[in-house]
Length: 178
Image (cartoon, rainbow, N blue to C red; front, side, top):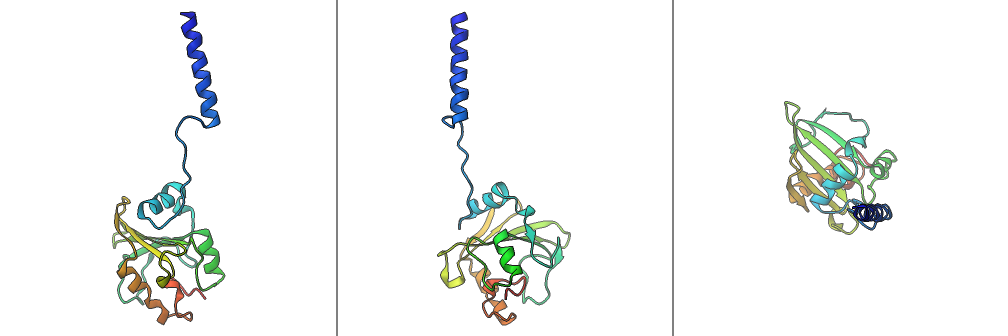
């Protein structure tokens, strides 16, 4: 009995040392943003809580949609969050957002109920014709409605070039980038 007890202690010790050294157990993988709907959702919700990011300059929570847009697929009320690298370039009026910029827009209905989450993610080389933006629309539970080079998103977000000084405005409606 004593011999069995000693073996159990030895095995437990070996396991704990192995766990401490990273030899056993689940290896945590670092989440990285990329042009993939599920990976991007995991990045903005599990890896980085986008709700801790800064909001688009000059906006707050649940601001009413703009009446300047020809049609508004995003909802009646919006909250727009931006990654740190995007925020600094927006404030600096650099004109084009840097690679790995992320814009997360919460889309609310007239009753202020979350209807969708729409995300723009810029990945170098993804879609040079459209400034490398990857588009994705999620249901509130994270289910993907559309992702990739979404024609409706691209067509609509190409329109601000007529409203802002920078003729491209990097496919952004929320404000002048230059």
